[in-house]
Image 1 (cartoon, helix red, strand yellow):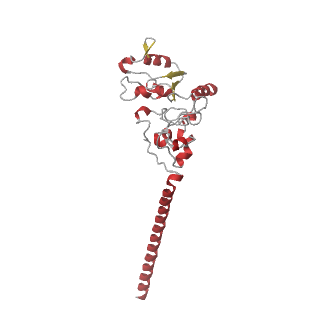
Image 2 (spheres, helix red, strand yellow):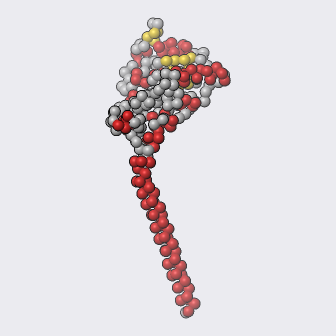
Image 3 (tube, one colour):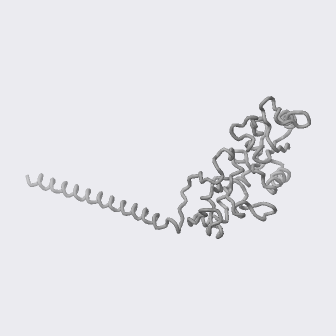
Length: 250
């Protein structure tokens, strides 16, 4: 198993990253030649990360675009969580097989859910309770950081469950929103502090009345429509009955 950190720059024959007198890309191909599989440690190896951000003058390239004839297990994060890294290797040694991967080549056991799904601030999101400015009263109460640019709703990783430094904390717990560092191209997806996900953030406290009125309106419209159809059928039935009586009279 070949574990790789970082990505090879391909421009000018790989001369932008020389290790031990040889381009990184050459060493990568040599080391991967006879391996069973490759583990791409971190977002640099998995996606390219900041080195591959536009305009990418060195042509920094993720590992899976250079090594195309081997399975590549991506363990993204900037950096990846230490326990996740250890667990991937442990799983392969214990079960003698590769872990189940998602469509992007990440282990499902750690990248199968969004950070938002298990975030301890999720109840505040559902209730429409958001931090509006840094260090406001809502921030002191631990409200949701979505409006401050938190990318938890669109980021797949185990940060909110495994956490960092032996489970002590993670960025959202320390008061800073997720920047989505384990997602492909996160450096080029806009400012970290802008809300760019366009989610419908309605909640019990903020929009319950509005949601209730919309639901009531929909029900009222349906009832009115049903009544109109019923009246129409009744009138049509009366007209048919009158026509029948006139024919019999004649």
